[in-house]
Amino acid sequence: MYKPTDDNLANNYDEIIEILTTQLKYHQELLRYTCKIKETLTENCNADLLDKTMNERGLLIDKLISSKKYYDSIKESSSFADNSIWKTSVDVLLHQIHQLLNSTIIHDAENTSLIKDHIKDITYNLEKIQEGKHLLNNEKRCVEMLPSLIDICG
Image (cartoon, rainbow, N blue to C red; front, top):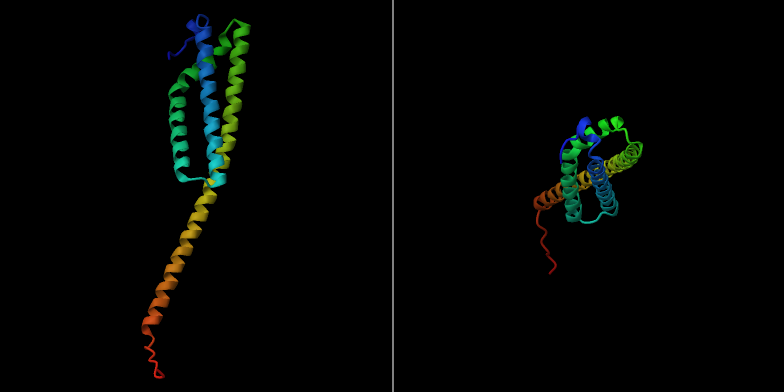
């Protein structure tokens, strides 16, 4: 991908629309992965699926970050376009990307909350396990200290 400038913007409408369309697809996929993570966290599905989804989402975020400078330059330069039809197309794509990004942010906040709840549950369960081990060790010590009972009746 190239970084468009104001000078070559007018000559590359199709390429710029293609870049924005690709960005839109990336953001749609990002939202899909984010929703899939939420679903996995809500349904307590297996950790392997969650790990795989988070890794794929991370790779997609890397793609978005690497292409952000092109996206930002188009976003900034679109105000210089003379062609109103092209500008309308660009504005529609930019608006759709913005909506997807907002939805992703909302779902990410929900995912963060779900993850915090799972961490609290895990911490609580680990504390209970530790208390159980402590109780068993105390019981074991008490049993060892009791004198042996001898059955004298038989």
